[in-house]
Image (cartoon, rainbow over all chains, first blue to last red; front, side, top):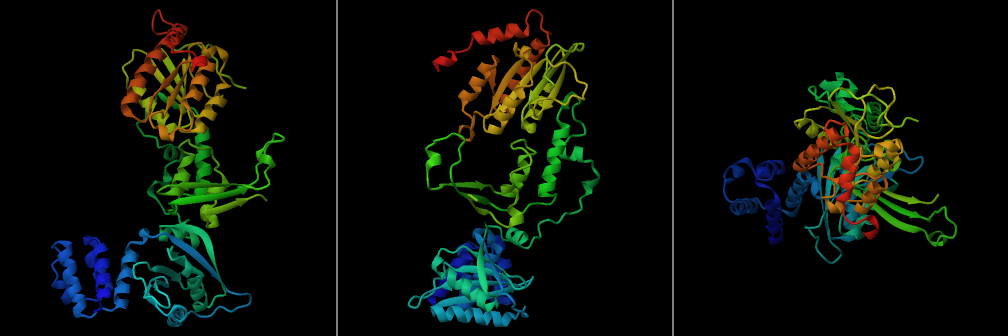
Length: 339
Length: 180
């Protein structure tokens, strides 16, 4: 086994937390049951890793086996990367062909290899007609860098692909090209949507987030539920604005629904507008160039935070449509210009 | 336009009613709970409102003390208070109104300068209290204070009236606003 392959496998296994190790190794399905049984997983991690490398050497692991392990690790640790969304489209009048996974994989690989010569491409299919693609980029003269790969999740029955934001930006056009041609599309466009949570991106892009689940509490009157009133609440406390509270709850529910919101961490607004002022002769209003300004909202769970703003009394309901349109418009990066 | 007046109703027997006005219901609720835990000879009633004017359809007791809760983290809170103040009759400001500023402890989150609320309280000639309502200990102390002030404003403390208290509090104030 190549030294670089051994090193790469070792570093990948070291990243895996001990409680996930057996699950991931089983999913990898490279080492046999018998081999795995010989490993004492209760030792210190370094010893376990050494033993595993030894077993991989016995089985002569190749770079593609190592790449597969890396894909599985990333599938378990999706949140470590920030994911972007690409949307492809067919040209006008093109027919919808039947998707052939084998043909797609071959075509994709060929396009990249023809352009770069040194590139490692690996595939792993999962349910829902999705394929995970891992690309380690090299150039005409350098070997692929296995430690900075790009991951792509392509849902073959849809025109959408999710990619991990790569540091190696120069390869993005080539990646786009390969995806488009291999999947028999005409054009590819990057959507203004980014998040660490792949599931949430999926829910937003495929519009699957508005599923209401039946709850046992659905018979409780809205008032009690929304005010969070304790049954034993003190009768000496009187809420004066019950009508207003109900209005806010109603508007919040109409805007955000009853379902859990998809998880996003940022919303970013780039403003490029000219200064408008009621006063005449304001210095800022005389500027020819528009003013530029960047506003970024961040939160561990942005949409839930926005949903709770009005009920908490921090903002007035209804909220600005710029905030509430995020899942609907499938964007969390906005550019606002003068009309 | 419904305006709150201090003496337009008859007082209830041994009852003292406080009105807390503020945008963040959770904070008001917690303060109300803390106040009601206090031992008090009078019967306490706490009304919570997001803003004024209050809905007119309700039959409510005479209000003895109004506390405007301003969250220094939120300009929306200040704006709401300023708009609500217009619905309070001038005679309320003879000791039956006070301002409570919360959130001063987390300086980095404050979007309202302390000077703004000081000026607001000065304009309305009413005391300004500071308390981080999110901290249980501070809240309990403030609740105690408010209960005492409420009892005075309801006239349950013989020999001290709301106006007395107001002038007492004013004379112990620091340098005047112009010197700041």
